[in-house]
Length: 311
Length: 311
Image (cartoon, rainbow over the protein chains, first blue to last red):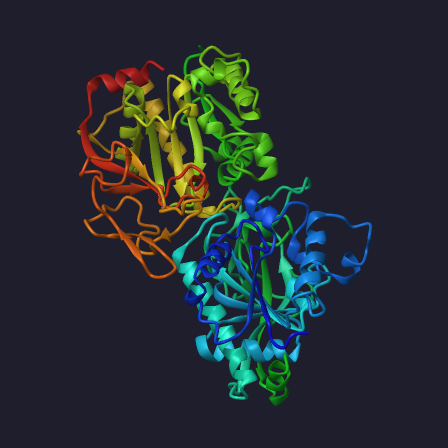
């Protein structure tokens, strides 16, 4: 593996158009991106979906990197083939090997400028802690959810998602672009510092750890019986109190929050009160009105920096 | 024509999901919609596009009602066929004839709760003035734009669009639903008053009259060279001053407003300073970053009420 090349992916989802627009600007004028001396590979994740202005063609590319799926020759969906192709070209053992993957996303949820980390790999935690120390970004830590697997960055030795919102699908917003670039530049600066032996981490990393997801109430035929309550809209990262309104029916009926009663797979945790990805347009088909997290403070470990510096 | 049946259309664009969700609620519980005694036909405009969560399948249904297009047997796109079908069923001479069409839309632009009127038909102006007097909604009056024709409501004796935003495509928002219902109920109440001989209009109707549209700066290959400037985002209905920033390049370059210099078809009007449909996601493909209006005060004419009452 070439020491240190970083894969930057835009348009893993074809209707999230801010990052691919930015990426095109950086290709034309590389000096516009402060890369901290890091060698980059800039790549469009799903060109066909981008051209069609759709999240995906056959299936969600960012749920198509599960090893079982990649190794099954019977799976020939466009996105499974594209996942194999990305790994063959930019994977750790690829033609242009990359050791780090940064995947640029946007969302209709009010996630602000945020990071998504998958599991607890030490270099991921070092990267997230370094960026959080610089910019104060919230971190959503996704793990242990059997219905949501196969994320792109999991197939690289380290990597995370930069997730910025709210912005409608299909739209370029200058402020979303600015935030995306700011977070990416912070990632690259932290990585460069780690390699130079100069990275210092804060005492602790604050994570919002995924516990499960909550669906809309639905009729027997699967159609939504209610909408998200207006008091929940754009309230990502703000903890729910017992009895807070969650869903609103057109007849005025309101469903309220009861901690521990409504999430899968680990909804019994009464501390799971922090909602994220509230009313993300793409998650309707996944049966997710929002996900619920516990907020935790994880002391930064010295080994994290070493793990990142080695990549 | 049956006296007075009103056609209410939702999902003329399949990824505008608030109105079709509401319509489904009203079908299940008609008492949830205050119809003022008006006989209604509730109809999904483009069921195929709704199922696919796309604006359209072959072409924009709300640009498919131009008489030339409808009468051309060589035009067999799904949306042209659907337009013919809607007219055959609900048109003024249809099987279930309707005299009024209300077309429910949503937008990624911050249009708030607003009305769109096409041309200067007296009953449309009566309806808009009556709703404006009740709710204060702004009115966008669209006319004389050869590149934007074939709107649904133009094929009914009277009709207008209720346009509510901002909301991402593909998403149901409770507050967007509430506003949509409020505007529709106001339309029906005004219509019922007119029929009962009880409608009183204000002295004048305030309209924002369409003068033309402004596209993003583009590279030679057609890709956008700039994004909307962040100071313009969500500033619909607020007049531009000379020199206001319009577009932002990733290198920091800013394009500024020069009145009368940039719109088509009638951009020479220096009073065209009121932007609408700013950064509507669906208008990228139409080459529209925003449209520009003049703001005018039109004294209400007594004949308007009579024209509406007759329908």
